[in-house]
Amino acid sequence: MSGRSVTAQWPELFVGLTPGQRGTVVRNLAQAHGEGREPTRAEVDDMVQYVVGEITPTEYVRRCSPTRPTPVLTGRAR
Image 1 (cartoon, rainbow, N blue to C red):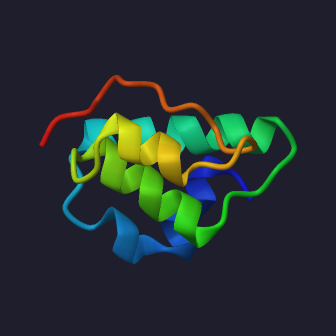
Image 2: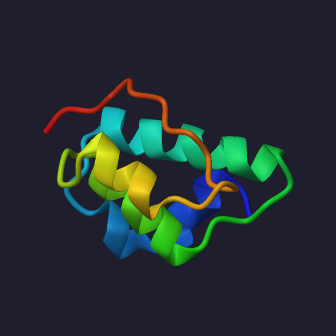
């Protein structure tokens, strides 16, 4: 699954995101896909929450496993 297809698989997670926020999430998830792994719904949800500022960087890292992509901070604005 590519980063773009997660928006189709779990569209409810992307409701209300700005185009910049959506792009940031998709780019980060595409990085994981490029590394040969498929993000889970929980990983996508955590990434969205981080990008929109609902969770802190510390909380995001706490939730992450070592295999999750490191988020790129661009586009993080509400």
